[in-house]
Image (cartoon, rainbow, N blue to C red; front, side, top):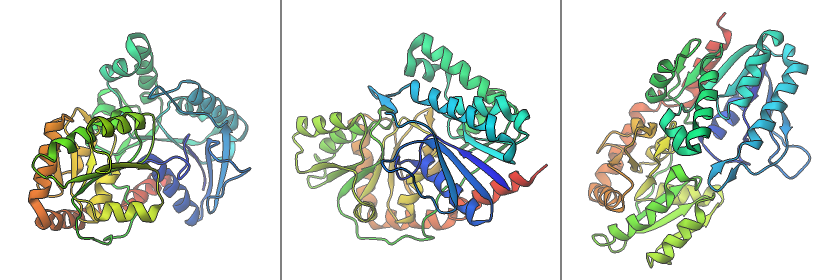
Length: 378
């Protein structure tokens, strides 16, 4: 089968759950004997990039995705135009075009030439934003336009996938055109990752963008230290919010107690996560929350934040594999950290047991089988 995957970011040049999903999907499809093309933006310095068995094509130039903590409009527009031009020329060679819904313009491009190209269109909906969130993100006029573009994408003829109950319900409410399958698994790691004794260190790993609320971790640790004087923090990753994280460390007087080293190599990050007291994920918005599963595989409880746009809470059973804080307020996050500490080794054992019980359902293999089955359906 000739398959074209479309996403504007490629792991490991950009790091995130969706990036790993598409990288794993591309490699597994190629290993299964399919001819796979991956359309993306240029993100690498050298002339070409190697993904085993996959033909990677950059259809848009290398550009910064964010400005002032928000996604810029020009990169996705150029990427959408690049996808449109590619599919106008080569769409007839593909049996399947499988794209992320976001950043929308590539989806609209694929939908526009679907009949001409004679391919079947598959769309992954990691998130569906509400009209209220669009307005908060882009303002009254920009938010209304963004919401209308999203709605047009939802109603384009497609075979859809999503990754949470939250966004499954939203897609149906927005009038999805086509069949929808909820894929529950993205975890592609070992069946049971190595466990370590816990250090009294709360760890965050991910992009420093507004919705992740990373700066909130620092005053939360300052508050938690009132009860746990030796608790420390390690905040990995980078992004537009990192200067706020560094300022918060200085303002709270936690130099040396909370560190933010940026990106580190995989072995160092693995050791930090596996030995953490807890993984902090204070996001206000998550489409899935893969890192929750990765933490549980190592017997590490997580702290997440309740909220109407946070699908990661679906992966947390309170008191079994983590704690759901009421908000990202320092006191609420501090209480959650203290709660994890009080749970001790029993909570770590419980998190590991939660992973064992759910490993098959939450595995990449499980979702991959559903995707391939959908490709084969008439």
